[in-house]
Length: 248
Image (cartoon, rainbow, N blue to C red; front, side, top):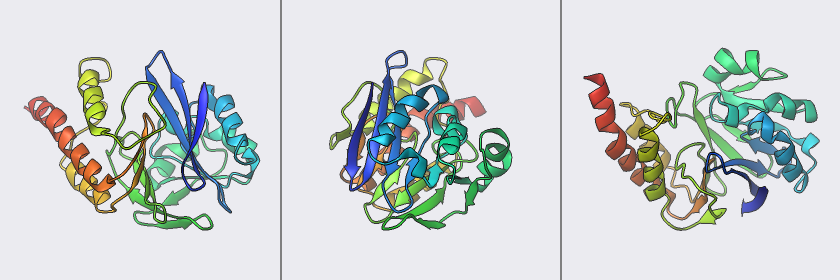
């Protein structure tokens, strides 16, 4: 089942719960003069997500299709979306465009964004933030919508379960539980912890976001600055010793 919820003015969270994985896969749709979809979902989810998008706007009018990094739930259905929306352009980091996206999934050349580059879709202003290895992958980057304070934060704050669309409650505790559980199974080292992790998260916190739109789990509304700083501490608590032991 796929649900759709407006998390900020004309910004919609599209969510599909996959029971086998006990996790939600979320996409974010921005209704504006140049509509934007962040995350495509995997190919198998394309029909469900397309139907959800059609309840807000004609899917063929999408102009921008953005994502954090090269991964199935981030951009697996990019070609399907671009075939449906013939004037759409993929948005990604320079690294993603050069090493993966144009060659593997894009129907047309992607628009590569530089760090701190801004994109206006009409009344909304997005800033691209290059964040290598945060949440993971060399090519990672995030989008921050400046007028609503919405950070499209990909896998950051990932928490499992079929949770409510939005919350003002703690999302760092459930994230930390997920991280510890993943470390005990095949998804160990899901998120890396490098010398750049904390400074990158501190940079995100300095934006002082008020809406944290995570790919897996509820969208958090509240003091995003403190939540990101708490996230940084949670990652250090769980991962820094693991990475130190692995190095030795």
